[in-house]
Amino acid sequence: MQTAQFVSEVPAGFDFVSDSQHVEALREYFVDAREYDSFFVRIEGCAYVAGYGMHGVIPHNSNRVFSVQTRESLEPRTMADLNDVRVTRATRALAAYARAHGGAYMHEPCDAQLSDLLADLRHFAQARGLDFSHLDARAFSNYCEEDGSNSETRASEMRNEPSI
Image 1 (cartoon, one colour):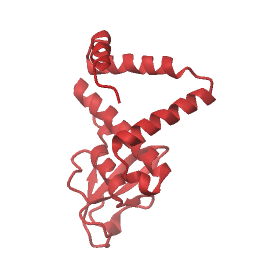
Image 2 (cartoon, rainbow, N blue to C red):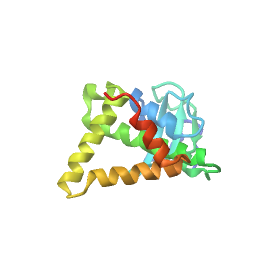
Image 3 (cartoon, rainbow, N blue to C red):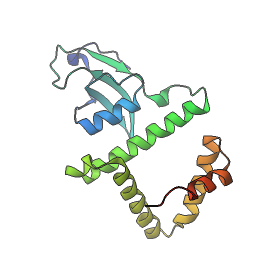
Image 4 (cartoon, one colour):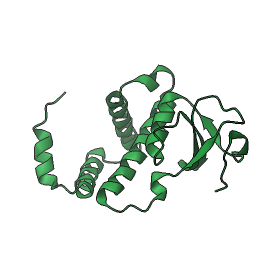
């Protein structure tokens, strides 16, 4: 990737992002990016492939920008690193879902957005003739394996959690 030092040097094809919900997701997606107020990002398909962080939210040509790495571009070293990548992907997916709703929905609590997304995924599965319960059980098994926990023990713990 071409390195830019100033806004005027950011290559063509990068989009400027300054809305708070999207910026928060990008802070999680990029490595060591918590300090930036806005970003220039390049998207390929559904993934961010490159980015620059910037202090402030008005992109004057003379503002400095700083290249940021995606977490997925790093070689995961531990299971915790892999799980950080998984959380980052989930954060991006939930942010995209909230943006698709638009408006005030973007300010809804994360748990409300997640439960709405899960409900919509149930509708999606039903419309495609997929067994959501089976897919959910398989996802739970994958989660336990990735988390390093025993699925029987974890399932028992989850059943003891208070219901909504």
